[in-house]
Amino acid sequence: MRARRRSAGKTASLLTMGTELAILGVEGQMVIGRRMAMFMLGGPKVREEARLMVNEKVLTAGQAAATLASGGKPKKVVRGYRRKVQANHRRLSKS
Image (cartoon, one colour):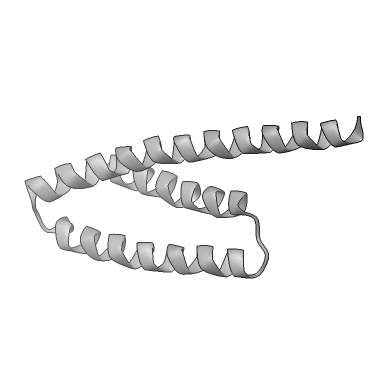
């Protein structure tokens, strides 16, 4: 019986991770759409946005690698990415 509880917990954990990843994908597509529209329209903010985008990707990937290398859980990495994507969406929505 005890082994069954563990496997049920693992299943719930996998479902939670799957849901988090799916939401991250949708949120990421929203940010990509806003950035593409901004890039197509052009203007003075485009160059700065491109610079921010590249720098943030490099830093976030490094943070994710460090988290995993130090024994952090993948769920923590996904949550970190989601926070960054949500912040980008809020910032780009104001423009």
